[in-house]
Image (tube, rainbow, N blue to C red; front, side, top):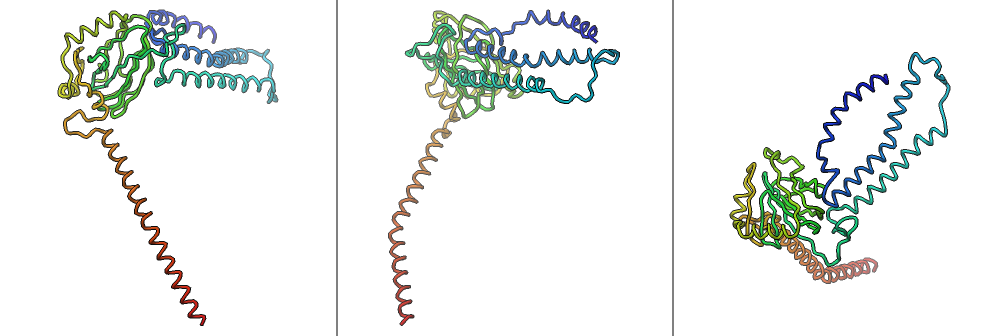
Length: 342
């Protein structure tokens, strides 16, 4: 049996050699958040291997030791309990689950995508006065729109970020749910129509990579990818200046055309962007004459408030009259009782 396992292992070695040439970006990313997530994967895997490896080893050992032709193996059909063995069998997994749960709980809060960053990397904290760069992300069918509100520019299927500068993504979608994911930068987070999600991240070295949708969203999903660039601050400023100079104008009319489903959309640059466009996208009121969701909800809340105040006013106004009628009824009832008694 062991010789069979050995032969199979040797056959798998060429496959492992081929995999060694793969670019495992998930486990070797350029962003601090993604690096912490990779460390969490390693820690969790090692903790689970503390159980998996001994179990697999014991399966092989038991199969070999108690094979049919091994007559020297001790045979104890009446054995049914060992306190020491029970402690190991139940205690070791319990301890690993406790440690794994603690690590997961801490990491879940520390790596919350909504949580503002507190460091550039493990050696450099972020100054309390530092303001993150805001990038608004819109998942379209089947392309990505990136709006830089502070710079007044926008791009389609290309995203650029300065190195060592915290970035806050505000993410939404035009029609169906997608998932925004850049393996070099951070974990994935969903993009949903009518809602806004947030992702805080930072890139720590210049890099050229790719981002994509990690959630199936229709026929063009396979090509829903974009170029990702981590740039030095000077290169990023130059890229912004060139985009502002050479790009077109993105207003509601242009966005309405851009929103229509298309595949393999080329990289496009916009030097000016309507200031209220992203808010209109989130509130699903880009088309002229459409009522925005935030206004609709605000009007509904005000209407409910006014109705409640009106009912409360009427109840308060009617209360004294009802009390007066009750008093009169009580008086009349008492008079009738007295007359009957007489």
